[in-house]
Image: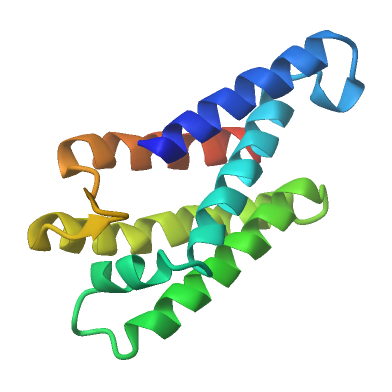
Length: 145
């Protein structure tokens, strides 16, 4: 849920800055893209902190070396966020991040089924996580086309 707040708050702040005359932030598309980049930078950072162990518990057991998977997905989120800032890579970054979100949803399902906690709190329930994931995917698609 916190990531949704990070996304929406940064989107509104960036759009407000755009309304004040900052040209690169003058459209909803651009500010959505930058807000998504901020969100992915935020979520990627968790892959390299103490929270990485909580994230590793989300990984289904059929994946070997869950901590390595956490590091790899963190790097992919960082690369995707960077790509959203670069016009030449914007579209490719959007597609790659959409694919990443789809594949990482497996970990969200596993976390919900196993009642994994993140920082001592239950992982986001699937009834909320699925619409959030679909919103992130739709926003990525819309903002990178």
